[in-house]
Each structure stands twice: as structure tokens, then as C-alpha cells.
Image (cartoon, rainbow, N blue to C red; front, side, top):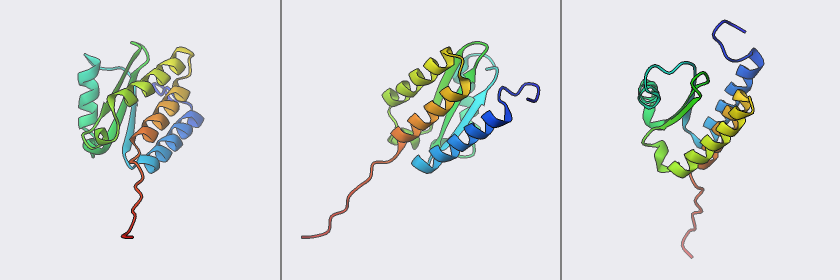
Length: 129
């Protein structure tokens, strides 16, 4: 594992595969930052989110394992289908896994939960009768 990289190659592959699956599921972009948050966590996470290519269509998960911090930032478009309560459920699931020492499993679970909640509802078009 490279110095400073919190993941093994297998864990990185699993996390990347989960992100791809989530993006296909809900058509939003997911980014994960695991490292030291500079300063206050929320403004730091917001700055990271705003630096993404398409922040309105993005969900950023920021984890600072040393300080035991977790922040989720969602863009305006993402918030159309993803409520604060749904984000909170994913945060609780991630925190539970993190408390058990499972960083990658917690991230994967949280990403999939967010994607499932953010998925636009299917509509049924019925023609004239």
C-alpha cells in the first residue's frame, strides 16, 4: 500500500466498482475523500465539493479517520431526489461500519444507500384510453 493511501489495491478496486455502480443507478457523480480535513470539516468538505467538475450533480463523502469526522455534501440537482433524512440514514450506516473498523465496507454501504435513495422515481406513462 503506498504511503498515505488508506486502501489496499483490492479495497480501492472494490470502492471504485461501488462508485461506478452507484453512478449508473442514480446518474449522479460520487466522490470520496479520505484524509485529513484542513480546518473545520464542513467548510473543508464544501470546498472539495465545489471543486468537482459538476458539483450540482455530485455527492461528496469526506472522511477524516484520525479526527473521526464524516461529512456528506450534495449538490443542488442531487437534492431534488435525496432528502436530508436519507443522507442521515446513510451516515448512520457508515458510522456503524467505521466504529467496527470497516472503512471500505462503510463507504461502500453508504454510497449504495445514497444512490438508491437518489434514484429518480420511475414513472409510468399511460396513453389516452
